[in-house]
Image (cartoon, rainbow, N blue to C red; front, side, top):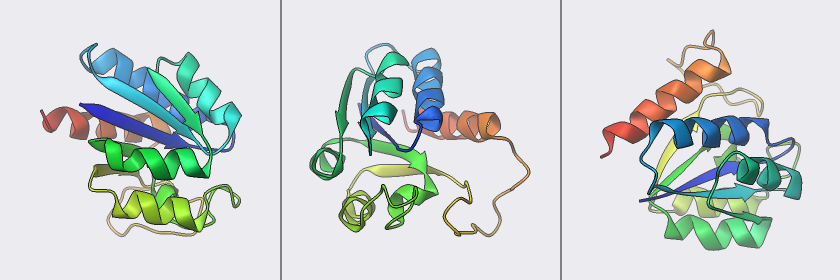
Length: 136
């Protein structure tokens, strides 16, 4: 199974996700770090991703070749992450046949009705990892 972790800006969320995936999932799980910038990709690789790629073309090319995509809800919103996530990236991610596991962080003016906004990021990541584990 191949999992793509998508992040941008400082890469902290992607790094936390990769670290948790590495601790919780079998070692043969392939984790691909897809960053909107080199810093984000670098942090995810240091956290234990098998491979990494950066930028619009890398994201558009790879999202159709993975089984699961994980990131914040902003990865399916054009121009999120202060404009780092391009409309083409958002379209490719949304149209990918991969299962999407999205963290409901409201940094792009999207409110997910029913999502508990009081949960801290580590708890959201734990819930996302549990969703991935349930797929096996």
